[in-house]
Image 1: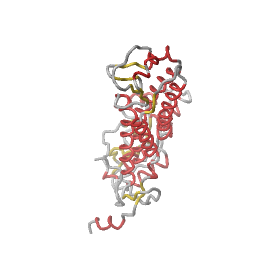
Image 2: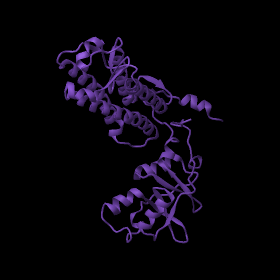
Image 3: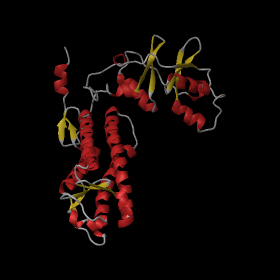
Length: 340
C-alpha cells in the first residue's frame, strides 16, 4: 500500500528506514574523487567526514558539483569537497521527523546525516520524512470532504488519467470507434476506388476503416491535399502527448502527495497540450471533409465525440484535482485511536 499521508501522531527519525549503507568521503578528498565515488556506488550525495575522527562535517551533492564546479569551470581535480559541500546540522534517532524535514527544507537539500553518540548511523531524505509529517492544517478547498486529501487526490488523478488515455487514445487507435463516419457509396470518389464493401467507413486516429477495408491517412495526402499531412502530424502528437500525460499526471499527483517539487510543464502544460491536440484533431478532420472536392457525406461519430469529451473532462479534472477534495478535521477520531 502506498503511504501518502499520516495522522497527527508525532514520529521520530528512528521510525524511518535509515539508509545505513550510504557513502562517505574524507574532507580532504577532491571533487573528482567524490564524483567517482558517487558513480561507483550509485548515489547522488556523500556524507563528508573528517579524517580519523570521522566527525560529520556536511554533505556533498551531485547538484552542488554541477552548480559550483562544472558551471563555474573550476578544475575538479584541484577543488576540495569541503569547499563545495553544504553544512547541515545532523539529527539524532530521537529527533522529530518534523525537525529533520525542516532542516532540509530550509536549506533546499535532499539529505541530512543521522548521528548518534558521535557515530554516523546513516542518512534520511526529505522524501522519507514527508510521509511522516503530521497534517496540521485542514484543506478547506474542494467539494468532497475526505480525511486524507493527498491520498484521495493521488488515486483520483490516477484513475481519471488512465480512463482518459483509454477513452481518448487507446480505443480510437484500436479502431473501436472513430471520429467521423460515412456510407461507403458516398466515399468512392474520395478514396478513388470502384467499390467498398460493408455498411460504414469510420475515420480513426491514423486510418480509415471499413469491412475488409483500411486506408492509412498518409495515402490520402496525394489525392486529397496537404491537410491530411497535418492530420497525421496531429494524430502522432496526440498519441505522444497521451502517453506523456499518462505518466506526468500520475507522477505529479504522487509528487504533490510526497511534497516533491516538479515543474509546471509536467503538472499542467503537458496535459493541456493533450487536450489541445484532441480538439485540433476534430477541427482538422472537419476542415478536411468540408474542403474536399467533390464534397463528402460524412458525419461526426457520436460515440467518438462523446468519448473525446469525456476524456478531456477527465484530464482537466485530474489537473485541478485540488478542487475536488477538501479535508475534514479528524483530530477527535485520532485522539480516540491513541493508546492511553
